[in-house]
Length: 194
Image 1 (cartoon, rainbow, N blue to C red):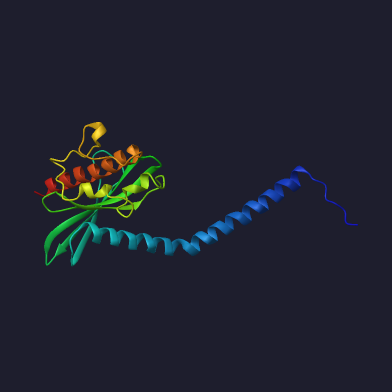
Image 2 (image 1 turned 135 degrees about the vertical axis):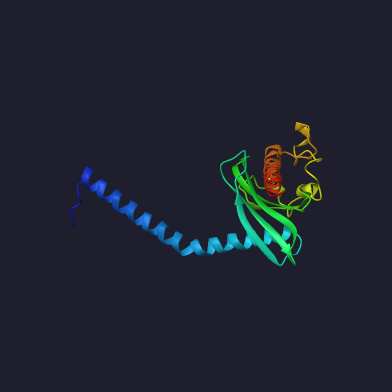
């Protein structure tokens, strides 16, 4: 009959250390194996979102702009067709979503009207907050072809023009916040170049 090892502080510490090291290397290995595929998936999703929110284009110029009300920059993607600017897709975000930060793409025509929106990332509640995605409800359609200088980007409960998603007012307010951040930054950037 084999002798059972005595449980000591040293043996428990060594066992815990071995388990922790094996788990860390396993997680690191999985991360390294999937990193490129995850990044490629994000790139494709971003390209599809740009195509959804601006008219057909032949050239794209991307740069980052820091908004006046936040620390993280927004990505601007100016779309040109035959050297003529046809729209700007702005990758924007909000930190006031029900489940924290989410990112959307907002397309603006050269005169500042919203062409369309597309959701990039979110963790909102399935069946409620996720209705900000055009594939789940008509909520984002109310932003299309609107001029934010005349269309109040707040939900109607807050005195704005946007009809909130039923039972998802926080997500609706956050969506408006992200669109408004993109619009203000777009206008400031346009003003800097005039």
